[in-house]
Length: 267
Image 1: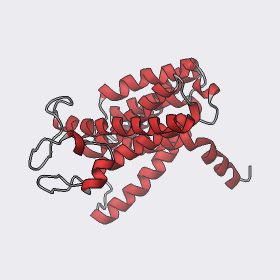
Image 2: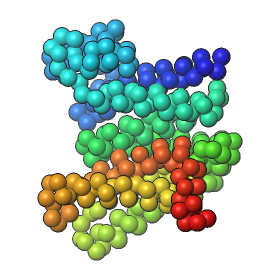
Image 3: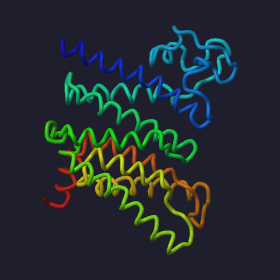
């Protein structure tokens, strides 16, 4: 029975992942996420239901439109597979319980934020503000206490402080940068996203998570600067991408990462 539920969790994640692809594609274009039905972005042919099965249809058609043979790119199957695997991971940790719902929602919202920020350098309020509310629910449910192997808020106070700490630390960094450089260095979308993350993980995880995201962003930023020859290092970086990746890593692998870090310090 547990194997069957695990399969259900994976399948549900893939199905929701297919919808996430619609949101990721249409939100930057200010299109409805409901109408019209899914269609090829090249020949505009409507995608038949049998060609819209998450993961399987992509593999069968080799990522191409049945009609015009244009390539869809790998993003579609990556989003579906990632969401499916995270839903499976959630089930393996919490089983069939109410805890599955807010955790699944946060994972899916984080994936959407990652890809939209990567596309248009915007973190939509319609996603991160409800995410703060869901984070507070996670704290209210005490999921960090019920499932200590996951890095989550242990109570409502932890969640509230995490949200305030996450928003406050990025606001302070952004204000200091503007004071020194006379230009904006941090968008409010990043502030709201870290508030959402802090509400989910609790305040103790905010700084390690921010450090992990900053290191990842700095490494990629230097690589881009060297490749594109940005000598002044003045170019936008979708920091929400790194916040999102760090969030997923810390929630599910935080204890392992912290143990590894302490072993490096000889703790």
